[in-house]
Image (cartoon, rainbow, N blue to C red; front, side):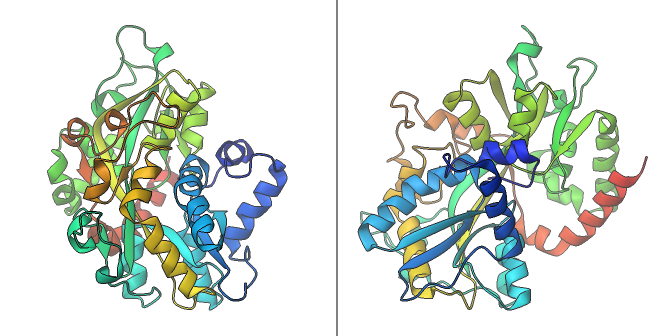
Length: 382
């Protein structure tokens, strides 16, 4: 999942059309963010999908788009945005909808649905599992929302450069904050959702108590106090490709980022990285269709196709994100290299779930604005 970054990060993220000039990729990204990337198409022969770019988008192209177009004859126009909810909100506010399907986080799906911006989706209309199990019983709890359908579970995790720490590598979230024992800069995302939880985990809060703690002024203060301990050592990132690049360039020795991005760097590119699963932050990505999309029938057809059992299992062949349907799990096998077992790299691996923090989308839908205000004020302070 790619977020905004410098030219090098965007170039790194641009897997979908590797032969195009980098400037063109930059222009495409800019167009998506501004909501200007699509012209109207006639007769539902095309569908416009806005996703996160990079290795994640590549997995969607391979698992969803290519077979969808082959089966239906409908062309898929794939566009990358730092966060697809941003152009979606902009298009809704401008009453100029140019995207058909947006890959967004759960809290955004809830908020936009409550605002009446998204098409409601009936679970009974979604494809059943191969054994006939209805979709509403086959999707993992939380994966079906009134206006959105999840495709993947993913984790924000810590990764480090194995060449920097010798025989005594970091192992826990607390080690991320110990710059005396584990020297070097740290890469963190410039947003509260993926930083406050980590500070509390490192400060000894149990994973299932994170939101109880954040629900109190004292808990929020505690999280920022812990972040204070490494503030001067943090390199802030905004695009999903950036933490990988920061590690590869030696600008940081440890960074948090999306597990699929780190997996792609480690297994796909041979980078000397290792993931720390302690305190991973688990979240879902969901497909949503805005009201007023230019190709509503093709959009719904695409959403149903991309969230069936086989397609979700196929995506795991290209990136280490867990499928959102129970029936897909047993179909997950090897990485596209034909030799790497994917199960040990999945955020949904039982071992990785032991200390995982589950996202609370309702909490963030209610508190995102105030947490962002506090976080930005903290960033600006000396």
